[in-house]
Amino acid sequence: MLIGLDNPIQLINDEFEFVKIENISAKFIDYNSKDSSNIELIDENGYYKINPTKLGAIVLHIQAKNCEVRRTLTTKPITATPRIGRFTSNESNKIPWAELQAYSGIVANIECCDVSGKCKVNGYEVFIIQSNLKVLKSFNIGEKFTDATIEIFKNQNQRILSSLEILNINVQGLNSNKECQI
Image 1 (tube, rainbow, N blue to C red):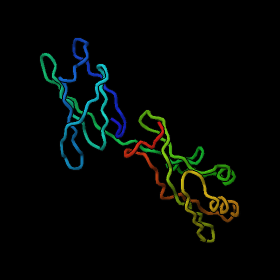
Image 2: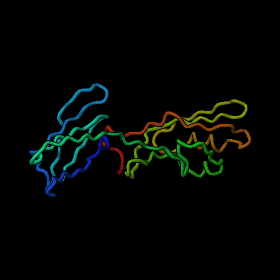
Image 3: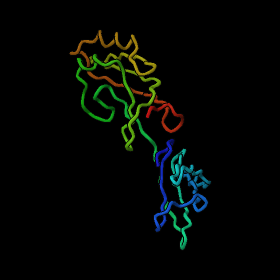
Image 4: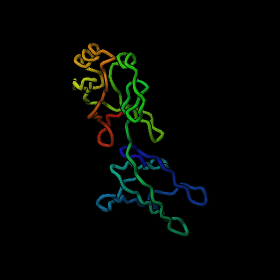
């Protein structure tokens, strides 16, 4: 179950009939506090949707004709992967200097959970550490590199550049508000 999304489930009894909503109860158990609370099942003609809001477990109690069944589903967050072109933040490959200058900024793609989407990038910091240990810094608002960052890139001599770090990437929309585009 993905946090912040409507997760569809279908419950069918041993006679291949949809289980009616009055025969199902659902509880959410918070992993951190261990608190338990009822969670809403959204009925859509025999299919149900569950929209968890945080990390935990959802326990379904299903009353069948001859027995009671209990199923536990875990929730997990959706994660976004910041990228510059084909390069992600989770890899050790270095971006060639000429290729870096071809990009206009960074994006944050959802690349997990069989979900394809994009989240809003609020801002990030760019640090260029030259081989003489001089550090150049630029703060960027939104996805695109600011004019100041582009100017720093233009004025760099590739031979002097030792390291490029993009830090403090602030992404909006993960599990809190619906600003991710899915």
